[in-house]
Amino acid sequence: MIYLGGCGFGCFRNVIFPHDQRAAAGRAPVGYCLLGQNGMALSADAFHIHRLIDEAVLQQRLQHSRYTVDMHPPVRLVAIDMDGTLLPTLSQQVSARNARALRDAQKAGIVVAIATGRRSAYTIPLLEGLGLRADTPLITSNGAVTRTLGGELGSESIDRCHLPSRIARGLCGLLRPFGSIVFTFDRPGRGELALEDLEQAHGRIALWVEANRDAIEVIKPLEDALADGDDPIQGMVAGGIERMRAAEDALKASGWADACEAVRTEYPARDLSILDLLPRGVHKGWALERLAARLGVDRRETMAIGDNWNDVGMFEWAGQPVVMANAALELRTMAKTNGWKQAPSNDHDGVAMVLEAAIRKLFGEPAVVAG
Image (cartoon, rainbow, N blue to C red; front, side):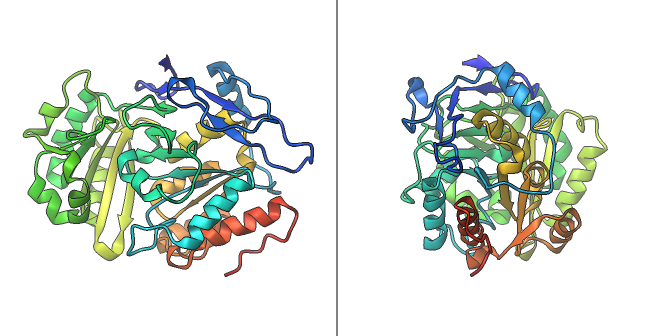
């Protein structure tokens, strides 16, 4: 495993072989190939040239990607949030139209990446059976882990960052009064999730507890799960919206403010908010930028689709941000102020409509989003 500098909290990477040449037709999008376990390429197009990307080249591409222009070229990479975006409000199943649009985008040569606050094991089952490529990138745990759909859990990831246990222990003491605290470890099976009060968590996030019961280990005090060297990839605090805003304020005012990243997600209809605790500087936008650099895709050719506050990092970096119509009014107002596009809601296959338009544009057809 090769050390990858950049986040300061023990990031690691595998290797990616991007396809850096377009097809002879000129407008055909670049394909891609992510390297899986044991160095086996998960997919490739024979007419493309494969080139090893080392860290120096990655950093150079990151620097060259930091600019914007008014005219958007066709999309070559799209990052799509799960809950409230790809998934309907009252369902854990991707709709037929959204699934078909994902497959069609991949067939057209667009790299489709899933970007979610969920951990990998809570994401992959929802994507299995959709007919997606095995090397579909998954940005999980709000950017802390990037791997492929076909990659084994617990194996080496494309990117993986850890929150040092020392910091995690300090956050326990600070945030325990505000709600249920959970830490996520990047390993399969029981102990992947550690918390100290199952009853409290069940009262606030009951569906999550039931869906993840086999991975949960109850440890009191929670600090005992955070021995030096056993670093989690992510922490979270769950509670009512006002309590989580207070928790975020408390964190910002504390001595731990510069030691971690806090990313808030809100679900007003349920008065539920999740405050994710990540290594400093790590968020979905950070992970998307690094993925794009590895694939040789410019930010202008990158689209990000989401509905919540944890998607803002992607919106700010991607050249073509798209906010769902079901997003909170405050976020939709921010989108309007920043000139970000808006898609139909998650319950009306908004993702599919956006992807269908992107595919039409790719082949020189009118790219109007229509139901």
